Image (cartoon, rainbow over all chains, first blue to last red; front, side):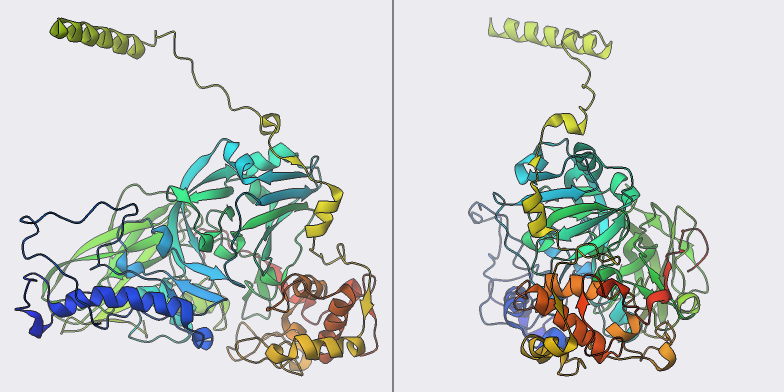
Amino acid sequence: MTVSSKSPDGAGEKGSPTLSRREALAGVAGALTGAVLSGADTTALAAQLPRQASTTPAASPIAVPSDPTRVPGMASEALGARSPFENPALAPTGVMTGGVFSPLQSLSGTITPADLHFQRHHNGIPLIDPHRYQLTIHGLVDRPTVFSLADLRRFPPVTRTCFIECSGNGRAAFKSPRAEMTPQQIDGMSSNSEWTGVPLRTLLEAVGVRRGATWFLAEGGDAALLSRSAPLETGMDDAIVAYAQNGEPLRPANGYPARLILPGFEGSACIKWLRRIELVDGPIMTRDETSKYTDPLANGTARQFSLVMDAKSIITSPAYPEKLSTPGWWPVSGLAWSGRGMIEAVDVSTDGGATWTRAHLQEPVLPKAYTRFVHMWKWDGAPALLMSRATDETGYVQPTRAELVRARGQGTDYHFNYIRGWRVGSDGQVLFAVDA
Amino acid sequence: MRHTAWLGAAALGVAMAAAACAGRDESVTRAATTPPAESLGLGRPASVQEIAAIDLDVNPAGAGLPAGQGTAMTGTKVYMARCASCHGVKGEGVSPSPPLVGRVPGDNFPFGADTRAVRTVGNYWPYATTLYDYIRRAMPIDAPGSLESDEVYGVVAFILAENGVIRRDEIMNAATLPNVRMPARDRFVVDDRRGGPEVR
């Protein structure tokens, strides 16, 4: 995506027969821009939209041999770096709080690289010494216990793949849609990883849950001491205290050294930097389960503990800022997921929802995890409106925006899982369908 | 010689593979049953003192509230010094920090239908105890955990009084705070989404 624009002045660039100078420069610029923005920007706290990774050309070109088969390659590396021509980047909306959006349009398959996983912090990213880390489990238990990270790693581990989605994901596209929005800006507060850790059930069995315990409070060790209550049956089901993501220890921004994973639940309940679990006889009613992360309804009430993320999908290609270069066959590809289990089907429409075609689902289809769908589409060069519609194993069908608003009210503020669309112009330019 | 030895090893390997396939390899035992979690002996007992040091949550019944007290009058000074720069001198909010004060006429709850309605402590928060829990753990944002118990009670009282929920001279402490009835107390309903075809 970042190196798509053809530069007429770069066609005969010396030493680079396959890439224009502008294209080569874009790589460096993207990396530099990302680094600068993530560290120094303080004005974006009020911004409603994440920035996009910039592709503005910079000064130093990337030296590419005219024939890489005729010269020795680069030296071995202690850490594998991305190609300088690939610059996927997160898009933070703030510095110490706010969302950090994942570049959905830059990713293939289903796994989000750990350094591109979305983030949401409530008062910065804590730096925690793994040797001093402690997880305390107490409350309505037989044996209040402190676990070290080494203790957690000695329990029988489990590994599973699941998505995490901020329940506010999609808010900007819902409330203030613009045609020039990328998948990252629309739905980038969602990601999918392979997590390794201890089943919470195992830890709860180790401490002995007492009769009368019906909920648990999970608390993070960050400067917000972010805390959420969840029903105990969730903790005894498929919850994980995870210490690894995609094969390596958690990154600090994703909860190092250990975090809670509640598969299928909204991200804010998957407490990062987990330091305490208290077994209790009812929800604590913390700020982030009362004043935030509740769903006002049109009938004058608000839905509380709406923890499960319903089925959703988004086409990640073609999508803005892509421009289809020519009529012909194009893969319409995207992601679908449901917090209630497996994706049963994804339908794709190229005519704004008048007709639908069942898309191919890439294997394996896993419960509560991203599922990649692909629909091969023969574009005839006429304007088109692309949409995707997911159905999960419970029979829930991703609703239209109108259906969602009818059920909840225009003021709904979380769980924006309605069908979105992309307009393809006769010139091939793809834009977010603000009115669809 | 070397060739012969290799053949011998290969033959042995084939024989072992055949035995394994037939389930006759006595040297391999099936995976033991996972031992019960409590028998692994991991972790150490948490002392009462170390739990107390981190057990900061307060539930709606007031469990977890510490000793101490405050009123809106005592809390005004703390609020002005520690909170007003972000939340405004009257709790009106200074972007991006949210407003804390505001009631809806008739204490209606228009948030689902009216996109302009702004949520505040006075019109949206269902429990006064949440204020204590949250301020103690997370505020002020530049120095979380730095307020003394009396200061937290005072700031809680200030915010409640500015919202017209309590009088300025009402004492907030572990006994009184759980009894404060918030205007939005009965507005919250359990999640009724269950999957299946219905959109909720």
